[in-house]
Every structure is written in structure tokens, then in C-alpha cells.
Image (cartoon, rainbow, N blue to C red; front, side, top):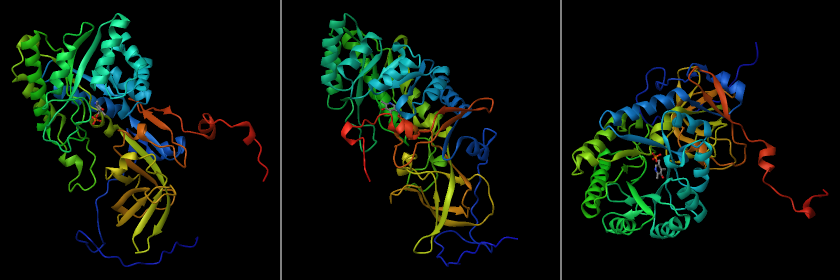
Length: 452
Ligand SMILES: *Cc1c(COP(=O)(O)O)cnc(C)c1O
């Protein structure tokens, strides 16, 4: 028998909860399988850390959201928010489900076209559309959501030059009771700018006003904010009809529904407190149906939901590197998942659990990533079982924004695997290597040789 491991005992203050005779019992449900594929097999086959996406969850959550809206309002169209997760395979799952594309840059616009989305089904948002982007968008018949007057004037110049009609919508920011108010995108509702923009678009011969758009913020916990937004957009539809006899084809309520993640500082878990798709859908559709818009001219309802659709489908698997005691005796765990790969750890207390439970005892633990950076903290304090080097861990709900905002920093970015509807894993993005990292570097000739 090998020598047993000894760890010097420490006495720590118990800060919360009531211990029983076995200590602090915290119910922790390990995650050993994702869609019936063993976490340990995934790590062995594809390396650690590893992003895993469940195609089944993507499709199920999408259908849940779609039916919440469709059962209340007949004309509903989702457009996948590319910046939330633009891995091509992920985008294609949404496009197979019938979702259009919502993009916020020339790069994302090109990506959507390359993924086979017809120009007329691409919504082009964002403050940064170059002249070349606008030309391309007009030529492809994309839905251009105008952000500011400079962009409006540029479209007014380009559309006649191209001999085409630009299909445009105005992005509108407004007070919906959510603070801080997002007033930097689009035209303001309350101060009349949105109405002024509409009055410039309507007489312009090569511009067709097809929609009105707002994106009131992100992780919005109050469905009523969407009711207010819908009411304000509906009022503009009525006003446009009265002045120009021009029906608006769609109202786009943007994204912003909360996912089930828990914000830092929240008292209760997000899975208990976040509104459901039904709550949001009820707020929007009820307001729309009861608005003064003429019955025959009821617009289609567009949604650009991002995080609430994809967060749930994403997992980040990793491995314990070391166990440590901090100076004050607290337990800490070092894992191979850093904040460079888990950007959202700055906002969320991510749900992290072991893939298997070796024992029931838990201890207040700080979980660090592998970076040589003091800010690399995955969880400041979480009741966690004592794990050993090499033990697998799983972080839940990481599908949104991490695979787009991840940073190449200190280590290579990992592989991403999609588990298909039959439980078959597929690599949908390779890990970086020294070759991929060096591919964009260039070496001036005089630096080729070094003599050490
Ligand atoms: C980011 C973004 C979205 C998606 O937002 P979520 O909060 O992830 O739902 C939708 N529309 C626009 C214009 C955006 O910028």
C-alpha cells in the first residue's frame, strides 16, 4: 500500500449555514454526462479544457422560445445574433431551425452570407458600417438598421448611385424604465430624434422604411420593459401610417432576455429568478395586439434573442491542476479554465460542479484559473467538494459570448465540440497551435538571426 496523502489540518470560521455532525453538507449534483456522452471520455478524446455544445439543447430552447411567441402572435421571426456565438456550426443549427441572421459588422455580414443566408434575411445592426459594407448590404437587399444620421445620409447618397432601393429600419433607443439607459445606439424616442429620422427617410426616393427596431439592453429581468418598448414602437407605426399612409412591415424588439445564469451579487440563483420566454412573449404580444395599429397592417414581430437561446447549450469542461491553502487557511483550487476562455466570469457566478463526486464534504473554496494573472478567478467563494489533481470539472451555461469574446492569452484556445442529436460528438472548431498563432506574425529580415 502506497503512502497515504497527508494534509495539515486547518481550523476555519464557518460563515453561513448550519453544519451537521459531518460538517457542512451542500447538495452538489455532479455533471458526469452531456447528452449521454461521458464528460471524462470527452476530455480524454479532445483534450482539456474543452467547450461542448449540445445541439439538442439549442433546438429545444429555440423551439420553446418560438412557441412562446408564435402561440400568442402569428407573425414571428427570430434572427440569430451572430456576436453571441458565431461558430459556423452553431449558426447553421439556428438557420436550419428557420432563424435569420442578425449581424453588427462587415465581418459578421460576410459570415452570414457565407453560411448561406440570403441577403434579404440578414439584419444589419451596429454603429460601424463602412461605405463598402453599406454598398454590399444594399446590393444584397439586406435589412439595414440605421444607427445615426451620418449613416442615414450615406445610404441616401449610395442607394441612388447603385440604382437600388435600400430597405431600412431605424434603431430607436428609449426610456423603458431600465437604467442605465442604453441611449448610445440609434435615435432617441423621447427627444424626437427617431421621428426626425423617419421624416428624412420617408420622402427619400431610394429608401424604403420597412421596420422599426429597438434593443433595450441585455439580461433584462423585467418583462414590462418590453411592454413599454412595444408600446412606443407601436405608437410610431400609427403615426407613420397617419402621416404617410405607409404600413411598417416589422417591429424588431431586439434581444436582451436574461439567461438562467446568476449575476454576481444576486441573492437567488438566476434559474429561480429569471423570467420565462412566456413572460417576455406575453408582455410584447399583449401590448402589440392591444395597440392602435390597424388590424390588416399588423407588422411581423422580429426577435434577435442571443444569450437566452444559447447559454444553456454550452458547457466548459476542465481539469483540476492543484489544491492549495491560501494564507488565511481557505481552500483554493487551480483549474485549467481561465478567464481568457470564460469571459462571462466577470459578470456571472458560474455554476461549476465536479464531473463525479468522490466524497460528500464540501468546503468554502476559491477557484482559480491557470493564468499567471491575479484577476484569473473563476469563483471567489463557492461550497465545493475537495477534488484531486486530475479530477474533471464542468461549468454550465457558457454558450453565450464566451466563444466570441474569448481572448488568446498565455495559452492556446481549446477545441469546441458539438454533440449532435444522436449523441455523436463532432469537432466544430479546432484548438489553436503554435502554427495558427504564428500564421499572422511577420519577421523583418534583420531579426531572423539571434546569437545567444
Ligand atoms: C447583442 C445584440 C443582440 C443579442 O442580445 P442578447 O442580450 O444576447 O439577447 C440583439 N440585438 C442587437 C442589436 C445586439 O447588439
